[in-house]
Image (tube, rainbow, N blue to C red; front, side):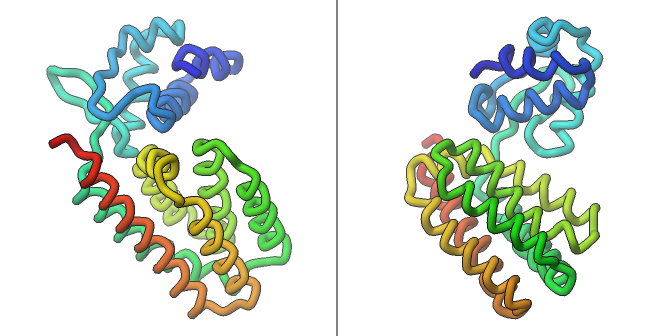
Length: 224
């Protein structure tokens, strides 16, 4: 799939900066746009059939998410995640998601748990890295949403988006999914048991280990 395909799908609806940002975000996550690649506003506007104004607004939105870097004289480019930044993101994720699960567990309903289990079941059958990444976020979000901390959830989601494209590449080259799924099922079981202490331990280890592997992957694959 190419950017203009994503644009065509979205613009069957209404042309807005949010929709353009959605398409550009997915293009970055899918690797249609590579890290460090320039994003020409005029070319993007032409593909979407819009003026440069909504494109500029969409790029500002993606800059706030950490996916795009805007330069005064050089325009926009896909941001490059350093190993130091990846480590920091995973450290922040660990702290914030532990807080989210602590707040959520006392409020989790059987419906929430059933929804999370269904997502894991769908993930077992997923063969596409992009689909797995989406289901991965849906699983975590399902467990956190009941905490009723929308600002916290938005921050956590942005952190997931920041490293999503690298995790997809990591998954394609490592036996990542099987281990991650095992840990997800263990986390879900702890939530069912309302065992916050165990859930926190499992979640922290899950995020910390994934972070360590991501940092190692970036170090190994960074330009020499």
